[in-house]
Length: 104
Image (cartoon, rainbow, N blue to C red):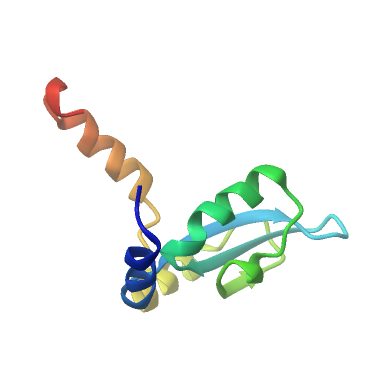
């Protein structure tokens, strides 16, 4: 388990950008890019599972719109400005699949 001091130090050095999708209280679909520090990730994941939470309680909203998903232009902008990798999950799965069985 990672200690609180380690997380505090990590908070000063790094952040994760997550593409979140959901519905407003009025039922309108939205997406948001949320920048979140490591110490808040566990609480954010727990809130996601429960549903009905405010993104800004867990990080900084970098971009959001009422839409089901970001446009290709918005994706490119986020990649250029913030270094977002929209294929990170698939890239990780590919790398893991390439590992020898004893390293997975």
